[in-house]
Amino acid sequence: MHPKSISSLRSGQSEGAKFCLQVLTDLQHRGIKDILIASVDGIKGFPEAINSVFPDTQVQLCIVHQIRNSLRFIGSANQKQFAKELKSVYQAFTKEEAEIELDKLEEKWGKKYPIVFTSWRNKWENLSVYFEYPEDIRRVIYTTNIIESVHRQFRNLTKTKGVFPNDNSLLKLLFMGIQNASKKWTAPEGSTLGVPVRNWSLTISQLSIYFEGRLDKTLNL
Image 1 (tube, rainbow, N blue to C red):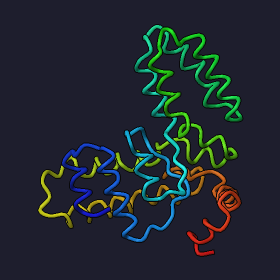
Image 2 (image 1 turned 60 degrees about the horizontal axis):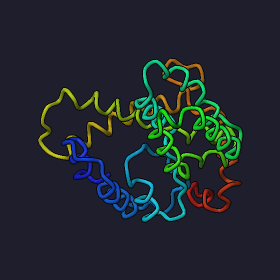
Image 3 (image 1 turned 90 degrees about the vertical axis):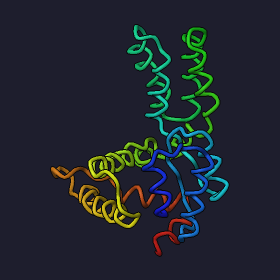
Image 4 (image 1 turned 180 degrees about the vertical axis):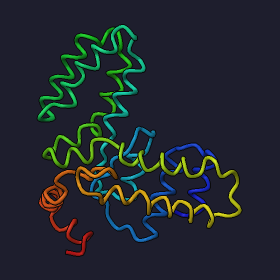
């Protein structure tokens, strides 16, 4: 990301579609030629911004974010039960099964909590992308929690530093943070440093089939 983009994020610039478009355009100018699947949170206009720069990219909205946002509108007395029944939607085996379960859930709760189902219906195209893929790929793309873990490490690095003299000093600190975080990404399973993506080799093989030719170019295979 360009230093000005990082500085804008740190200063609390609003995360609107226009800002997302600037970041994506910046990434393209820096050499990113293709994105297979983009897993993103619920920033309004983010999927459209991605596809305006990378039109062949599939955009998966974070299921965990959607669940949390839904429960905000559910009465406290019903949250536990609703959350339990909602699992039948996002843990369904196919998209068709998920849609049937969503219909059932709306039939039961829709009159009481219509805003929740309006949200799911309006975002369904991007919420349901992961149903197209086998379990190993689904596990990687259905949530942005991994990225948010990195963001938390960045916030911990910067929150006590006060004002940075220039953009480069901030970039150096974040670079060191990425170097430390990368130890978790490459740690063996069971390590105290963290657990990497399970069956990553299999996941890559599956992605190469679904995105024939595109993944090979990305990995220079």
